[in-house]
Image (cartoon, rainbow, N blue to C red; front, side):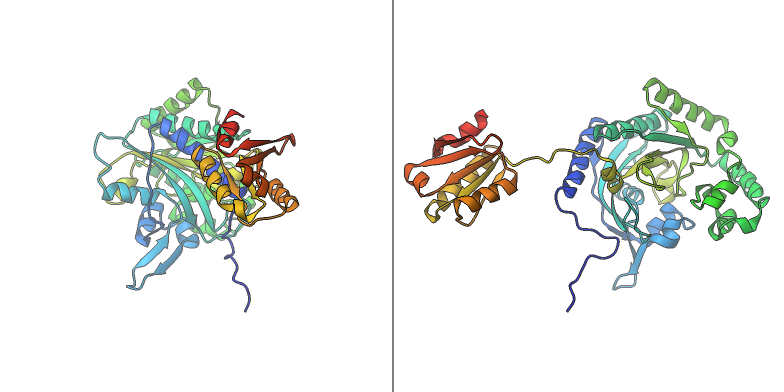
Length: 415
């Protein structure tokens, strides 16, 4: 019988790779808490209708990428391909969309999309998401953009480009949509990909998001949505940019930036790196003032973003792996229990480390201590056990000293 292996696009992560994810999450919690965000945990499975209504039936996510299946009662369920729709469902269901209130939450966990596995993006991938419900003011947009960049800087990322655009609102976007639709029909249709020819009729803005090189070149001179923004949308966007300027956060206006989901209005953004190939987006999001109402809740403004953790990990600078403080080597069976209790005492005092469970020779024990990477090897043999002492060896300097058993914790604390 052949061995069972992981599914394509799904990966196991041991340390030190898993340590990168732990580090990213720890920094994210620290930064997001400072901006008033609290953590929300949502289910991995949702009703398929949630994503059809929330993301949009014409998006690639819904049309091509979702893991969807019927349960035993025939209900269509989907493994979440993104977090925002589930967060909106949770906030509506639990009454967190009250008028004149601000709800700030972040989520962290796996998402699932059936797409070609590539560098930094697998079929099971992990995201950090922040959602802010309630404020309509442009200061909320600017605060979120600043928070994103502060977080990415805090984990050690450099040479990132914040790209920003405004998609207008339901009042001004329809006119732009018609203008873009007519302009796209003036192009040689055979030069566009099949998806773009379909999107021209269902959602012309999606054409600007096409990644096919020929389509990107052909639509290079497409009408700009910023030029079609109404006065209110223009003032909103100008305030966001002014606040970013005052906060010293650089940005680039990207007129082709429409994102891949239908619910965005006004401010939309991506943070891009050129160090991880063509798909270089490491964070993205924007404003979605109509999404809560679209999903059955009260009219509630909102905005949010997501960071792909696999892509963040690819960009992290080299970090020194945390070393254990001790490794206890038991050289004699009689000393096993004493070593076991010493390990617990050291951990209770805040030290990290382990004990070799089997009694080994000195040579074998020191080899294991070296492999552990511990700062100190604590040796317990028959002589030490009889004398009530422990030989403590500094694994960096090679210096070693015999200490009374009850003095070991204090000695390590002093160092």
